Amino acid sequence: MSQQRSWFGGSKPNYKSAGRGRAGGNKIKYMSVSPAMLIKKATPIETRIYTPTNKFVDFPLDPQIQKNIAHKGYINPTPIQDQIIPTILENKDVIGLASTGTGKTAAFLLPLIDKIVKHPGQKVLIVTPTRELAVQIMEEGRAFSFGTRTFFTICIGGVDLGRQVRELRRNPQFVVGTPGRLKDLSERRELKLYEYRTIVLDEVDRMLDMGFVNEMRDLVAQLPKERHSLFFSATMSDKARIIAREFLHEPVTVEVAKQRASENVDQDIVKLNGRNKVEVLHEMLIRPEFEKVLLFGRTKHGMEKLTMELEKRGFAATSIHGNKSQSQRQRALQAFKNNQVQILLATDVASRGLDIDSVSHVINWELPESYDDYIHRIGRTGRADKAGVALTFID
Image (cartoon, one colour):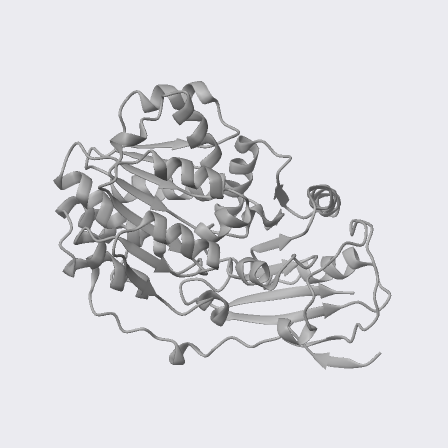
């Protein structure tokens, strides 16, 4: 069998023909791209070093917030943080165009927490497309606001509604939620949108992809006309531009390099040579460099079946997808974040917005529906200027 240099760091069999593994599932329609688009070396670090204008200590933030930033070990802001924090502190409407992994969550949380600390009585609404991203924003917000008597509440589906109603009645300064649940709480008159003079629409392109345009418009229509509005998206489609025009007043646009996260990622394909697809995956996962692996597939059933197969083979694996309850999804994410499992298998519910440290490899077990979704998947590795590897199975 011929040999070639590979992503294994040595040589590998030259797999050329298609094959399906036991957990591969039925044939499904893949995105239409050339395999050459999935092969790319990471950009050398020295060519993508950003020199910030500010350090975090330069921002006029409350001293307790500065302590919390220092506690996290942050010194230099990312490009989006460096450029957008001063603008938000000036209470200007903002369009932030940045892909995931660029630090945009802290870019809006830090100045907004500072606003609440310095101007008690104000409230902030943060709207985000997925439950996982909402949880992540809330966790990050609580860390940055520690010791400031600033309180966060999360309003998402899959969680007890009564508990969320009780928390809203405690009058938190920050509410983070998904469009459907926020609309439900508003219709029940438990979420009084007229009280929120600051709103963040996060991952707008993803919310549009998920069909939340009417929910977004309904929410915005109930907000005060005089408000501070922040709009974040990885891309700016025609629909997103329409929403921005309806939502914002004389916004300042800050754009960082598109899909920057993928620049840190070595991308390669895995071809099969009539071998069982799961066997090839097994050979990869037993190699020491595959320390923390995020594997993406197209179907909930396929990911659950593959998870059980890997567990039978002795791998520490878990999964998140739409058939799991919110508590099950959160437990799986925490186990992966805390290095209690080696492999997290997911459908595209996990491809946006999640901040998971030190993912060594992203594996595309099946191709996503679009190249943009592919970029968002592989953006889970190679974050914060760390190197990462993305591998895609091709039949």
